[in-house]
Length: 66
Image (tube, rainbow, N blue to C red; front, side, top):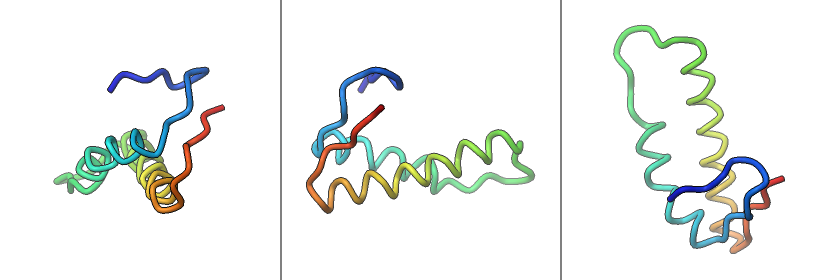
């Protein structure tokens, strides 16, 4: 799914549900050896997004992007 990260439309609950499995898959992967600090920051931020998407799904609300 292509979606602009700034100024684009909000994500509906079904869209949140559609992207959640892939984001979980990405963040659940364990890297061997040391991880670049910037990459680790991106992974941590993506994990936070996973939590927000899960809440949107549970509460049946859209994710408002601003």
